[in-house]
Length: 425
Image 1 (cartoon, rainbow, N blue to C red):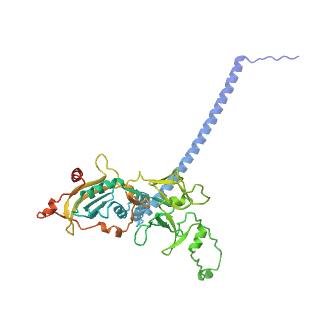
Image 2 (image 1 turned 180 degrees about the vertical axis):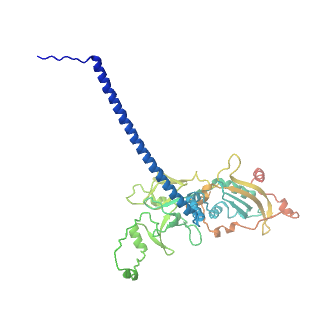
Image 3 (image 1 turned 90 degrees about the horizontal axis):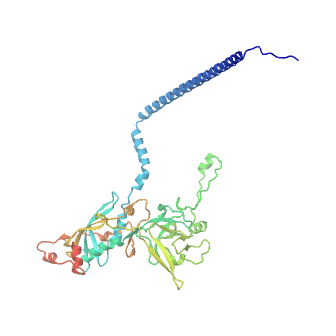
């Protein structure tokens, strides 16, 4: 049996191993260096390509900028664009000056004790709308000077309220404000003496019925000459046809197809213990279903069942004060600047005064639709028509002349001396 003899010394083996490891390290260095070089070349090519792309885009932008600057109507275009961008903020800050008549009809007393305005200044800028006016109070009886009329006018401001909201259909979907008619041709608010206020819904108007679905019309190919000469007209549906199609009681009013919507809830007709499906219903918590109605943002309705199975309804409006209370600095509310005796155009003695009233800013906000000012006695027949409030204005009363001893010496009437004293102050 042959035997192997190792004639290579151990140190020689170690040398050979070291030599192989060195060659392996050199090989790895070459591979890494080659990879780095390739990566560097790729990076340089990408960077150069991007720089060229950026340069091309910059040249394009410069060319477009030059064309835009050469556009003759550029300033007008930019102005229109800025205005379009500000439409939302402009709408939010828009105010309704026409509601001045609505407010005046609610706050100025008429009847036996009345107030006439001789000069009125309306300020709607800022967060505090104000009415500043000169007026004269008349008790309607001799001697026509009675501070109680003015005192009652001041105290009534604390009980003034306003209301706004939206009309909805029987499904609860909002009806656009332009689809509602709330006053007649004379400008008087629509009101039933027994059932309260209502409005007319132009149900057949464009975009006025939230439940109506747009049907896609199929276009058929036809000869151009035949289509030009053929006139197609669809007759307008009658009130009966609209009633059947929509499920509402549609009626004719001033040549228009309308649906009456009550702003004042019909408690007796709507409340039922066991309502049927799709039957008008008003619950004791004030929610209304299955009937078009007015969703008030201010007024809350509540019903309470009594022992004799009768329902007592209550109406509250605590959050929407027409004339907020004055703050600690004395701003807000109503302020009587001065008062004095005078004579009106009929030479009758009257109480002249100047006042400033600060209102809630929401009253004149354009976004608050269907605004209604409410007096302490309830809803007044108010409208934007000047015809209804023209009797509130009169020629300014004249100051007492020096030789008019009756005017100068006539005391201001009052229930008691203390009340008169406080009013004069």
